[in-house]
Image (cartoon, rainbow, N blue to C red; front, side):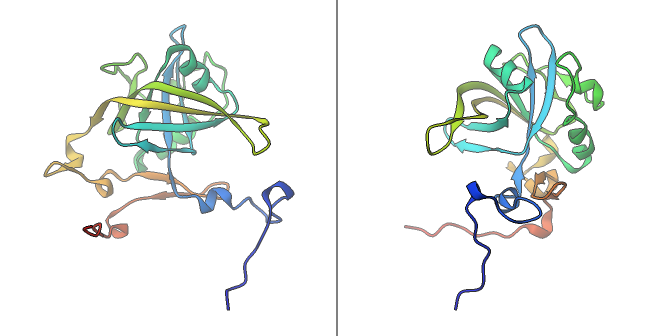
Length: 207
């Protein structure tokens, strides 16, 4: 006998104290995105809908619910930087969630240091041990099954430059556990970190 389950159709509501969707599709990497406006103003914002979508060339993407400063800046300039959130940077990342006016720099708000990128105009976050410099490949407004446009924009960008702290390369292999990644879970305030205790190895079968 299958175990009892909670069933719902999202269009009719989930009937629970908190929407479980984000908790089920998770934990997720955080898109900590730094941008520069056409006028030169700096912006940093975290996005919990973020992931990698292609290997060669590497393409990453994030979804913004609402046409926010990050999307506006990327559409205007075609560039952005993804910065890794680690456990020591979790509080600073949370500070950059604040809804502030475009002229307010989240770098200053969160005590972060802008560091010049190599190939794109937006700066990296100096405190972050890994950064991807990206150029916009596609900007899509999402739509539902009926074709109705949603107030959500999917930003896809090709990674054109990568910065990795040397301490995170062990015999040339990136050590995810040592980096202490922070991931977004569900619920109103759930996050997860990655450490050696979560690591297990499983090689693909040979075909």
